[in-house]
Length: 449
Image (cartoon, rainbow, N blue to C red; front, side):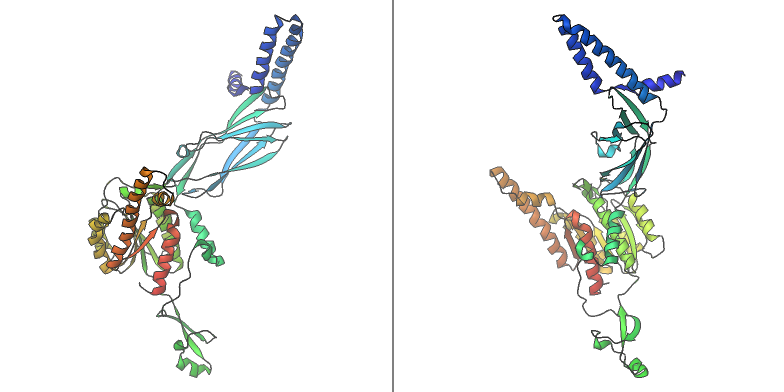
């Protein structure tokens, strides 16, 4: 019994309406000293209010479990960098209509302190609410309790109920974007995402089958022996070469901690790597992964095993940036000894200056002697915004001059790489996935690997 009374006091709240009415009664009692005719009506109002509070409390607290609430999501994990939908389902077991306020205790990573849902529920009604969150870093996201503040039509008392167990959702690299690209590929809508159709140069040399000639087939592929046997035109059909190694090499040094729109360059690279691995898998190639900073931290060998994409996802979930300088010498040593077959290496890194590139260029050139290297580095979108803003004073002109210098150096990096026959992708962070896939498809089409 004592425990039940303690629980009631814990949940009991006086509403804002009660305090407004109480303030009005106090003011009327004060004025009743001057105008005695106000005293009796004020006293009656006081007893009516007291009765309303008792009646309201009886209505709200006579049920032990008047409400239930649960939290759910479309997926059991969050997709990093994407908008994720969270659902709250609330059931009203009261025999009357209620006013309800819902406060969900969101993970501390979001730093949101103003979450509030206000609604009305009819007697016995069940209602589902949804809200959106966008995680910008990988890791565990711990949701707290769901707080329900319920009032009856009288509105004098409020009952605070806490329901829903603490809930943890891990934030993984962007699997939502991966699904979007997969669905676009199935529905032939990749152009909507910016994936370009690239004209084939020449033809593939990997034979697939002999088939009947149809209008539009290359007459150079006619198989005359098969034509003579079947007494109709037959052509050789070729396909893109398969089972080639495609390694995503991610720089995890301090330069990749730079944030754009809340996400670090590392997280943009990880999201793009996951999609790239999936596209390579669809293209019958073997995706792999290598992460490095001052040393090589992680290596997932290129393979086409059934669980390869899951291995990539788990490895990328645990990838963390360091504060040290990245060692391209260690990268060269590891690539030379561990990746013996010629492969496509998509190197996700960033160089802010031409001198920064030149310090590492000798190692990249040595890797490029054995493998096809594509250096992916990032456009500083904040500099671009600064350059596009008309200057208003001398200081702004000075800032834009410095910004133009940095922007020019970024473009010089692409030219410097091109001078040594190294491919590059210079992209804004939010366009990274599309641009890297386009480059991969271009390389496949041109038969460079």
